[in-house]
Length: 112
Image (cartoon, rainbow, N blue to C red):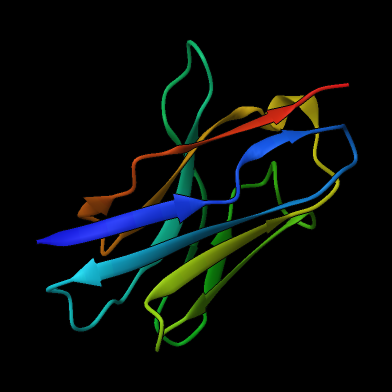
C-alpha cells in the first residue's frame, strides 16, 4: 500500500507564494517521476510540473519562471514552490508518483 500526504495549500493574495509538499510512504522503493497536477472548477486536470530521479524538470508554459519543483529522494518527498501567484492558479493541486499513485489534493486559492 502506498500513501501520499500533501500539505501546504491555502489562501494567498495575488503575487504571493506558497510551498506544497507531498510525502510518499508504504511499499515503494524507487521513484522515477514525481509530479504535480491541478484541476480548476469546470476544467480537466492538467500537468503543472514533473521531475525525474536525476533532477530533470518539465513545466507547463503557464507556470514557467514562477513555479519550481524539487524532490528529496531520501524522504520520498516532492515539493512545489509557487511564486508570483495569479488568480488563474486557483485549483486543487494533486501530486503524482510514478504515474500511478495520486495524493488526496490540496486547495490553492489566489484571491484578494
